Image (cartoon, rainbow, N blue to C red; front, side):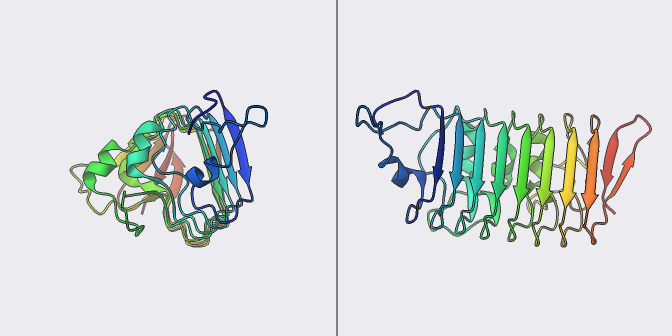
Length: 246
C-alpha cells in the first residue's frame, strides 16, 4: 500500500465481507490527499465486528504493533500464524473477545486453512518478549491459550485475564512433541502481577501434566466459577505464588 507511513493507530469496525486487513486496506484513504494509508507503522490496531474475517492479515510485517484488540470476529479460527510471531516483538497488549470460532491463538502456517499442531521447532521460536497484558473473553472453542513450551517466551507478562470460555481446558496446553527432557517441569512467569480465571466451566488445570508454575511477583489472584479446576495455588517458602498440577 502506498501513501502515509506515519499512521500509528486505527479502529476498524463493521466490515462485512472483508476476510482480512489487506481487503480493508484498499478502502483506507486520506480524505485530504486521496492516497491510501499504509498500515506498516501501526502501533495500535482495534478490529471489531468482522463477521467474515478468517485471518487478520497476510503478508504484512507489523513490527511496530504494541496493542492488538480483536472483538466479534465470528469466523476467525486463529489470530496469528507461527511465521507472524517473529515480527511482533513490540506487542505489549493482546485482547481477544467474542470470537466464537477461535480454536487457536497461534496456528501453524498452512495454505489450506486447516489448523495444524505446531512442531517442536515452531515452539522453540515462538515468543512475545514484551507482552505485558493478555485478556481473553468469550472464545468458546478455545481449548488453551498457548502450548506449555511457550510459557518461557512470555518473560514480561504482568496481567493475565481469562473469562467465559466454556471449552477451555487449561491456560497452557499440552505440547504433543515435548518430552520431560526438552521442557522444564518448573516454569516461571517472573513479572506476573495479576491472574484472573473466571467463569471457566471446563478448565481442569492451569497447565498440563507435571508442570508447575511460579509467580514470584503476583499480587492479585482471582479464581471464580471454575468448578473442575484441580490446580492448587499456594505460597512457597520464599513468598512466591505457585500453581501446582495434580
